[in-house]
Amino acid sequence: MLKILLSTLFLTPVVLLSNWFILSLGILIILMFWWTQICFSLDFSFSDLTSSFISYMLVMLLVWLIFLMMLSSYSLSWSSNNMIFLFLLFFLLLFLEMTFLISDFLLFYIMFECSLIPTFLLIMGWGYQPERSRAALYLLFYTLVASLPLLVCIFILSSNLGTLDMAYLSFYSFPLNSLMFIFLILAFLVKMPIYFFHLWLPSAHVEAPVAGSMILAGILLKLGGYGLMRILIFDTAMCMDMASLVISISLVGAVITSLICLIQSDIKALIAYSSVAHMALVLGGLFSGYLWGWNGALIMMIAHGLASSGLFCLANISYERINSRSLLLIRGMMNLHPSLTFWWFLISAVSMAAPPSLNLLGEISLINSMVAWSIWSMLLLAFISFLSAAYSLYLYVSTQHGTPISSLIAAYPISVREFMLSFSHWFPLNLMIFLSWDWF
Image 1 (tube, rainbow, N blue to C red):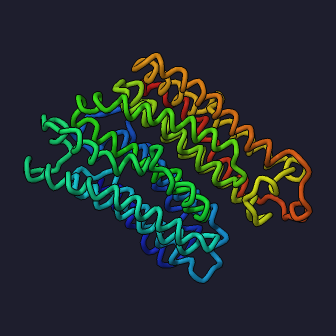
Image 2 (image 1 turned 45 degrees about the vertical axis):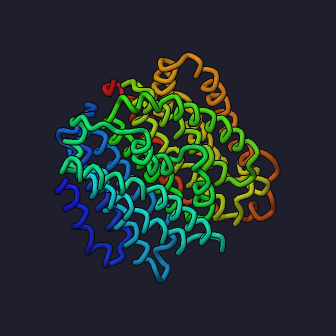
Image 3 (image 1 turned 90 degrees about the horizontal axis):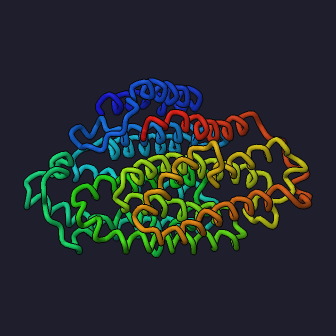
């Protein structure tokens, strides 16, 4: 853990100089160096949390997305407050790295909450509409209120066991009653988010800048899944007792949010609701109790982080030319920018889990685990898979077909930076499926 944090801290002088190119290059060098250090074997033990494969993979995803966030927000490099923006990204990177790598439960909670501060400031400072203050407050209060019971449970564990080391807690048989177990997982269920606690997500995505949407969809939702992986192993018996309730809510919620996607006219709201449906599958796989479910949850978290971030980037490319998020106005792009249509098709296909994307392997693993848990879940899973393809095609067809509006005809052409941004989202999704066969 110390090596990763030190290599990140070495970027501080570059942030002070506000040099976007050198900072991007430094992040890429760190990413390439740590990718070579990863051992390709899943390790769900907590004997050495800092070397956990799950932690390292999510840190690699984080560093890659921070680089893509800088690439997508390059227009801010000429603004007067670009140093503040870089500092927020830098602290967000630092807090999230510590969240994924720390082994003390209390420090994990502190870093988990600290990551909220830069995200809140990104939405408030660089959001598009006046309603961004309401969206930021939704994010703040949902997260804080759900996290307070978790803090109480941490103090109870500390007073009873005398330690908060996750390696010790995972092997120590500490009985949890239903209320305490719910309090432990509630903060992570809201973060994912589970249906009924998802209302903060669409508003936050809609009002956030492109960098805020990318980090929300790519990493902050994955904090919920990562936290559940750390909590569920504490008491597997209680996990099995709660599985029926949690999986039922997840699958029904995924069907409802998928149907909501089909009636959306706001492009960012559609992508946000699709994230709720995808993360519901992750939640079901974790509570199924099967290794297939846990493997699939990790794969889906990585795949969804790249796919949803790519869709938000493409939505931002369209927004910069039309100044609207409405699907009624963003149409006919195939006639004007056929090369951009190519990327819309590829990333939309990845989002619906078309082969050979990493999403396909993740969905197959998650569906297998939930069908093994209960054969009746196949009915809802079939609806979810069909509706996932339906709203992905609806998004693609609505934006690319039809007659373009006059302001789109006068829009400036697609830049090399935007092509590179689209490719950088799509390529890892199709490369990593060949690397992930060893995970099973």
